[in-house]
Image: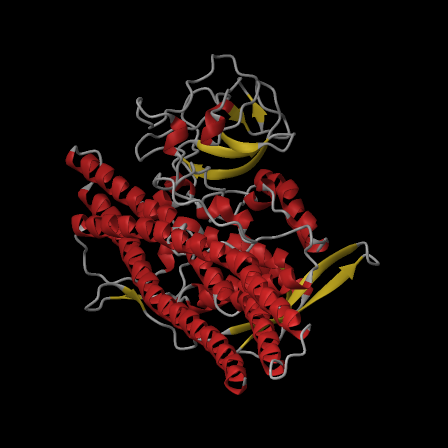
Length: 589
């Protein structure tokens, strides 16, 4: 398309700036509300008003002979900066500083409530592009996917860029009305509607508005293939699938390509439902994580462990990351929705490179990513009391925030405790042992009859305390390391709640807008009721996810504390046994 006028976009809101006569590649005309998504020649990508550009045809666009139209209206309140409106979660207070460990690169994820959110990454289109212009516009973006497919390089070059994530099209919103009005055919068309919410809210970007308005052109899966939320005495909960399974990650090994120029670590994954082993790199886990986060806006997908570059082939790091990936995989396998999704099964089962590429692109172009995921969930028909739901969400929001801070505090204390075990505690016991051993050596200098047994007892006691110091050094791998791994996983899991809760808050805000519009006669009662019913779907999913969270919390913390205390008990038993053994030496003195 060709720019008809100069446009200075709001970069914080995801807009791009361009000049008159500048050529742009239109990525998607399905953003809605009179906005398109485009890409500049320098690779910059963002939104622009439809009325400011003209699609280029074979004969070329006509030159405008009229002043530029006004910029599309924003629904941001005048008192609130636009940069604040794109925040995707509550600004929770600064929590306890995180412990320094090898999950550190995820800090930006796990401090979700203390850092301003960036605009939500664009999602894949829900409507197939049919025009030649759009298909051609998608080719440069597709190239980034081809690069990923063909160049399975090492982890250093696997960092996902914004361009690679964006893909052709975005947000899954239905196309606006592009019928030319009567009059001068050369004038650009397109209206910018202010009917429904902020044009660049994160909720709109992830397809929430499209779902609430019932805008969907793709075929919804059959009822028997939909995830189901059911009612119970405890409230809404996910229906557990019949085919539950687990996965084992094992045998990490260093592999290379291009005659050894590029190397990487591959992990072997075996799901119990097939017992067929697949090989995956961290890069593949990273891709899967992006897909799951994009597809399921109200489902908890915890961050992955750190993708370390320096020292990434050291045995301790490899085994530690494999253990953390196993924890992440266990959680995803236990989720009744994620575990049954096509993209997750593709990751676990595909062994053919060509089929992998096809499945990968299908996942990236899934018409039910983001907000449109709610079209694919079967929820009860019973209407919900919105005030009651909002009250429950408010209580849970405070709970999850407090849990995050308390969990972080325990994590920090345990991390410090590990350092003490491997530093001061070890040194102090070995200093005691060394001093007692020296005392025994001093006694050896005098051959007084009967003192040889005392000397032997002292030497044994010194050796015992030295061994106790070694026990302190080695003990964290049996109790504190597994505990801190679990606590860190939960820290990451808790960090996802502000975004998830904000999806529900945004939906409730839209419902209030719609109800007001209905009261003012700007929207029919049936349309408004349809929005309310679909908002109930978001509420049901959110409440079911909270129920799943609590079940996991009770089980996980029970297991992690039992294992920690059992390991502690064994540790002190070893110390007790050693002290009892050395005590017997003095009985014969």
